[in-house]
Amino acid sequence: QIQLVQSGPELKKPGESVKISCKASGYTFTDYAMHWVKQAPGKGLKWMGWINTYTGKPTYADDFKGRFVFSLEASASTANLQISNLKNEDTATYFCARGLPGYRVMDAWGQGASATVSS
Amino acid sequence: DVQMTQSPSYLAASPGESVSISCKASKSINTYLAWYQEKPGKTNKLLIYSGSTLQSGTPSRFSGSGSGTDFTLTIRSLEPEDFAVYYCQQHNEYPLTFGSGTKLEIK
Image (cartoon, rainbow over all chains, first blue to last red; front, top):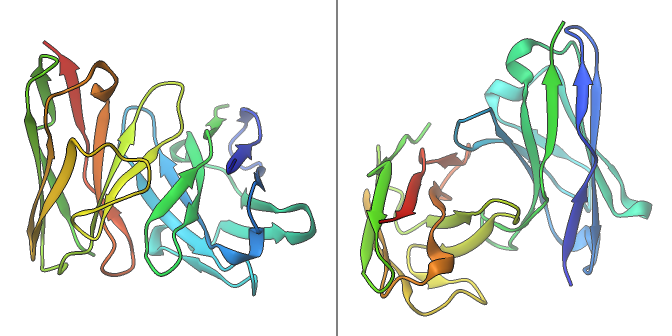
């Protein structure tokens, strides 16, 4: 069955970097886009952007340009999110989610990866 | 960006009842509105997209309606597993934007 399994919780200090992985299984990785979504503690969902898993081209929402990088290890069916120069407001759960072809919706989600930024 | 306003934020109902959740867009999004379900310990689930198209596996007691700026998710005859948080999301244009969520609780 389709699964997106994300990496474990991270605790980082301000200014550090973090890399969150999302390993896909049960489907052809390069046939589906991968989206990233942020959920701050007690808050709703915020779309961060998406990556074309066939070409590797990322697209970022305005609030996530600069310190955020989407990347792929296509041979390992894995998508990654790297956040540099971490700030307290980056404390959140980050979700990867597969894009439904032809629609800008997400038909399978990872379990979420929490990142806590604290000095 | 398209702002999505979801209401109510909280809703209490009993199993067997029917409920409706509203989602309003700040401008027309045609019929490009999706609904998701969030439950503790489970991954988020796409229920409906394009306003009224049920995703594979979504029970028929869920229905979506609306176009333009006003949309509704209706759940008929609530089952115990339906008590969850529901989010709407517009998929008409980038950036994709979500509503603030509706928590459906057991009365």
